Length: 158
Image (cartoon, rainbow, N blue to C red):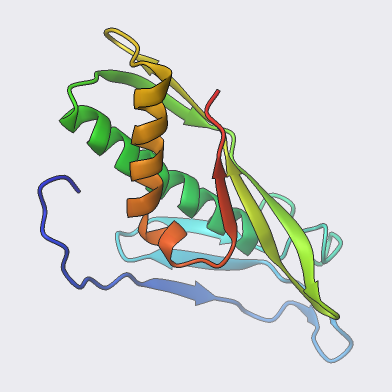
């Protein structure tokens, strides 16, 4: 990310579902496969909070979780790049990110807030709180995913 000129890029994912159960009655499985352009594959499903198991697969990743993870991952990658450029040596970065669903109008729901809770360890001196806040702000401003959303994204470093 650092030092690279912004350019148009394509990002692809393939979603594949095959009928299992009684589709006409709504008693069908929401379990499906998602394959990414780099070759990674995951089992995905509707959230069991929305579609009860066994029609959903609690072990599968739901779309809301994928979005929360995408925001957290994007923020982390920018933070690491910016910290490295500023001369800070990050040794570990973990994030317990969370998304909150809310009603946006009658009959419509959305992830209305995503909270990032990065916990960062440094190999050298720990940057001052103001420096960390600036790094997080800059990472948030650059995050392609956060820039693509209407949802509020909040960063609460630990």
